[in-house]
Image (cartoon, rainbow over all chains, first blue to last red; front, side, top):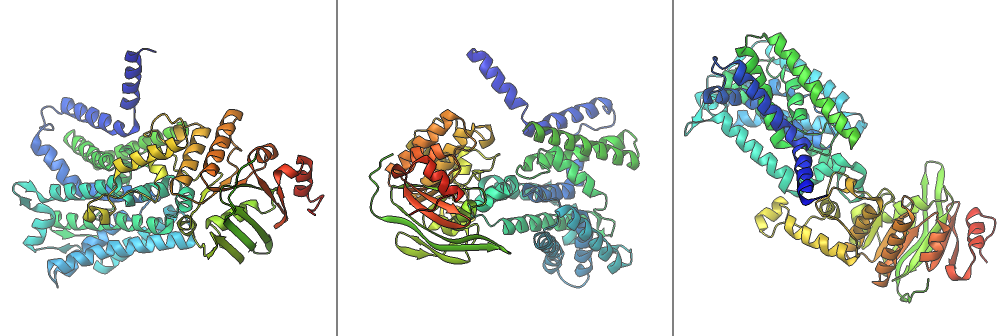
Length: 322
Length: 257
């Protein structure tokens, strides 16, 4: 084999790496919409900024879910946590200041994450079943405490901080996305905690044999996932100037699809933060493109489902080829 | 195999007992290993070899008995405890994360942290230092490793075994336990592992070798400890017994004098 062939093969191998799939898909979809929607202003900075802002809560949830998936867990309760955290934040804002309201909302995430984690480890039941159960409980609680009514937020500072505002012309939702993404990226790739998360997901037996506290790491991962969802709830509340029990309801499918298509393994051991972000923007872009093309919400839902199935199919095929 | 084993006891196991429910897996196991010595642990399936390994490496806690390392009784309640007193184990499944590369597996849960004290507290990794040390560790074993960026699942069985052994000795372990290190390997790769065992024992490391392969034990070990139904029933110099004797000890047909 000549040197040229070798490097060519290497480039091929590199180009076909799973982590890069999301870039191709992202660019392809963007190109597709740019061509088909050339007269609707799809390809414009304003529209892309719009997509990033609208997707911000989903992006944050996707980043959080990446941590749960890294250790081999799934977290189905994140959508319900969004609603409860937003409601708790909105209700608290009527009585106390912003800091306490934010702490209250985030502690919803902390508590749910702890409950999820402890139940999974104590009962030794799959995270799928436990978080399906807690999802039901939290949704019920969210509907109960407000009697299905929405809670408005009039605090201007809060809505500026968490949704509508700007800092030096940069939307606060974009700032939240970038900050959370940067922290998550550093934790997963630069810190020993990130190594341990992936070790627990990749081979729990090996992690245990090397003295890693597997149970504790899994618990942390679920708390991170839940906390991110609680933050997403605050972002929704800020952007929409209020909270309602339906918030986050339709996001679960979107988030799982975004993370899966972004290259994070649904079976643990491989996590990709940048993939999760691009995945969530891809989902946002598809929504946006479908709306501009005149498709209905129902059709968008179908599109999301199809994307999830495709992402999972890619993941499973790769798992088998090992 | 003749070695100049030092006369210092590296590991002593005294009257180890372990039960799971009604099953008495270990009912009194005793043996010692000197520094630089290679001792084979033999026994039929169910004789208690794996349970003993798990007790010494911290996966299980023994119900009774003492583990003595370099003359001191130690308490081993977790894998980390075992590693801290200088016992490293090369598990049969190697305990590697397949998606991690060689360096990441070598330093799993023993990462080198950044020099900056603030970053160090955060657990920030010093990847360059780890790569450097990984190269040193594998060079010490004369292993032929293609690239340190290679993920473990892309390596051959022999290469994986070499990485696992390198991880065990890298930490200045006094005692290395190897559970069936050649069971999954071909002839040439087994020979390489034998070379590695000879090399580390010549560096003063005490090796406890669990094996089914009689040939392998005769070739590499100085002594053999035989387990039968959860008890250590024989402790013999390999050069003084025939293979047939060992087999009859393992099957319980004969007891040591």
